Length: 261
Ligand code: FPP
Image 1: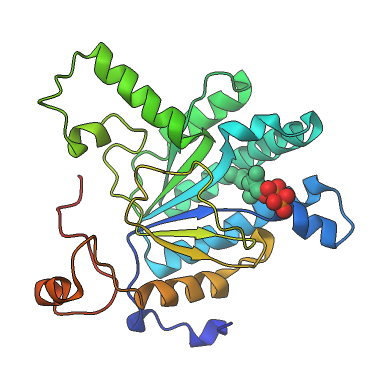
Image 2: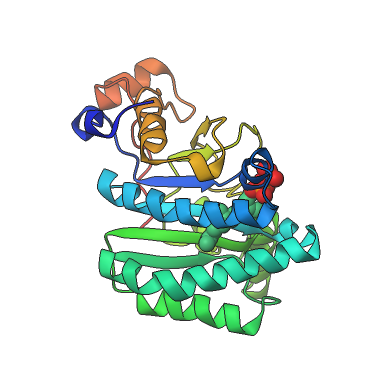
């Protein structure tokens, strides 16, 4: 692991969009003989550190998997504890995040969520909408398959003709419309699954699994992930030679097609 004073941002290629599956809160707590909720609270505290690091690194978009549509199936007390943590974090953090230049986005469904909590999410989005230093894209009550089905349903309602259907048009029906695809997907806690997270958008993302549990994934661990990303050779289905002549570089680069704007 690097030391804070050895982080050299000029030596690495900083991805524009990083997405994180924040996993391992439960195991972090179990290792310490604590209840799972304590792990989630530690995870929430760590989120603050990681957001600060993302701002320091110059990342433009940070998407975090806070709660999946499948997470409702967890034991009721754990779901309740998580909702309480989300509500508390929103109450405490929205103003400091606004002052920091963070713009909060939400991806997922607010239907079925406690009305008080869904209002807090809407307020957070509204209050920070003019910021542009970092987009913090919160996947809350989010599922990739549900997102795709919703998009298809809406396209059918809009009478989209098969002749007009393109990847760009499809993108415009997703929760992430207007945002570029993630360049890097980090999953903490050693699991090697994508777990229904950005399954359309992460088609060409570089994957970075780390055994570190989420509450311990600090700024140095984040920097290590960016170093690993910088060393990747992104080919987007092309050959090494094509990419070299296109970019004159070996390291992680932008996709050949223009980013969605
Ligand atoms: C996965 O760990 C984590 C979650 C399901 C919730 C993520 C929530 C946080 C990090 C809390 C703060 C977030 C916000 C947006 C305020 P796990 O419980 O599956 O861990 P395990 O696999 O070790 O059991």
